Amino acid sequence: MNSGDVSTRRLIDSFGRVHNNLRISVTDRCNIRCFYCMPADNVEFMPKENLLSFEEIERVVRIGTTLGIDRVRLTGGEPLVRRDLHVLVRKLAAIPGIIDIGLTTNGILLEEQAQDLRDAGLKRLNISLDALDPEIFRKVTRREGYDRVLAGIQAARDVGFSPIKLNAVSVRGLTEDQIIPFGKLARETDTVVRFIEFMPLDADSQWQRDKVLFAHEIMGRLEAEFGALRAIDSPVSALVHAGTTASLLTQADAATHAPAQDYEFADGKGRVGLIASVSQPFCSSCNRFRLTADGRLRNCLFSHDETDIKEFLRSDSADELIAEAMLNSIAAKKEGHEINTARFVQPDRPMYSIGG
Ligand code: SAM
Ligand code: SF4
View 1 (cartoon, rainbow, N blue to C red):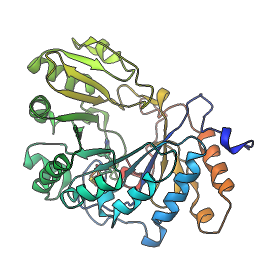
View 2 (view 1 turned 45 degrees about the vertical axis):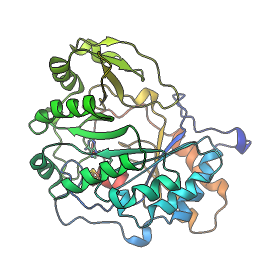
View 3 (view 1 turned 135 degrees about the vertical axis):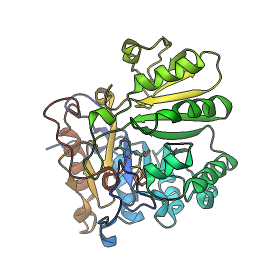
């Protein structure tokens, strides 16, 4: 469908959302088994030959930049289990038009790789840690590794990633007791803790709404302990109406369209974030687009449709065909994820296979 001068085309969907942010999954493999993402055992991984090579990923990003992609984030599965990931980071950092490269990792292999990643041009790092209590960590991940994550966080700090950003999925009945310790960590160190609502993307399809620890509840607990929180960045203001005492100082963060609503404590000590994907969907400002490890374009985490571009990449097709595939995928993007409607159907692909 789309045609015209390549240099003026943009990834704009039918709701006017401009997409400049590509999340790239580099593998579906992982060294732990978080219950909200993967099955505990007997995981069926993609055949290795289906994984896009670094050169293939580089080409997709290069083509993406002609359509306005300027930020990428590497994810998975666990991206650090992909050998020599820093080589890919270096390739992407060298692409004209790419202004920001991020990585989301569980941190287990970070101690060994933090320096190489930093040197290669990685700008942002998010480390996932759902609990400061090692027992709860084990319950969530169903594996060992807590000490290695802590070592990875320290290594990230040592090589200059600052502030350290932690992602913590919040699950009712499991992580409530971690909220205050995380709040203390945020207040006492250069750590921004981002609490993420549990989303229906688990491999076992066990998600239930009553397992979601909602952002406003987390905020209520933090405020009861540490006093009022002030909103910074990002356009979501509705948490205020959800029963918290926050005084708002909202500045829309148009550059990043960050799904997190960040807050600082009223005394200026420390920062936390809330990613209210379920209770306060941010679909209307979504600027994200995804490439799975096996070469499929996905216009939404919750999409049921994908566009396979691996065959284009492996059959000497022109760049134009891949650009068209991107434009068409974005053109077909739906308005929102519909988790909060009776129509919602969980996608077949769980989080580890899509790339979070
Ligand atoms: N393995 C890396 C990690 O865990 O950081 C990167 C991939 S992981 C799929 C990306 C992010 O998605 C992590 O922060 C993880 O906690 C989050 N995540 C995974 N499944 C989720 C779910 N069902 N609901 C909310 N967040 C989820
Ligand atoms: Fe692995 Fe990340 Fe999924 Fe946990 S959330 S199982 S670390 S891919």
